[in-house]
Amino acid sequence: MSKNPVNYITPLRGGVWRYGSGLSVYVEKLIDGRLIGASFRDNGIPVNTVDEDADTPSFGLTIDGQDMCYGWEFMDFSSEEAQDGTVTGTLTLRHNLKPVDVKVVTRCGGHGFFKRGISITNTSQTETLGLTAVSPLTGRIWPMADCLRENLSGA
Image 1 (cartoon, rainbow, N blue to C red):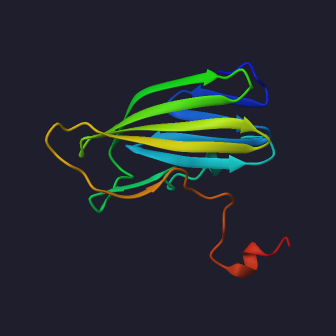
Image 2 (cartoon, rainbow, N blue to C red):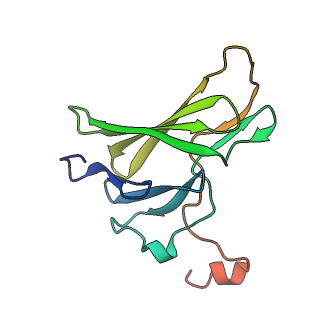
């Protein structure tokens, strides 16, 4: 965990990581082989577990036309703080169907912003893989109801 109160990364129990940048709080969970973007808040207060999103992947990856949102296993997590106060966390995952490892790198840079990158490694010595699509950070910023009128009720 970072000593910096503005930018921090806190690994929690059960495959949960909380990232903080200014007042922005982003939580990811590894649930049943899926890395989920469980919540995003801009007021510095994490979402109650009951209200977290349990279905939206935190990144998108398609290889050889196959959506890779399922089948991930935890390998490693590390974090480091730079002299400028930014904190970077690296989450390493291995896919259990395709010979692929990913390093999901999230940097908390302050002022409410996050920077995300993905390093993709083909672990096969013989098989080639076609990278079809990559989205380093996916998910919802705020929940939306199906009815437009409900979404605009507070406006």
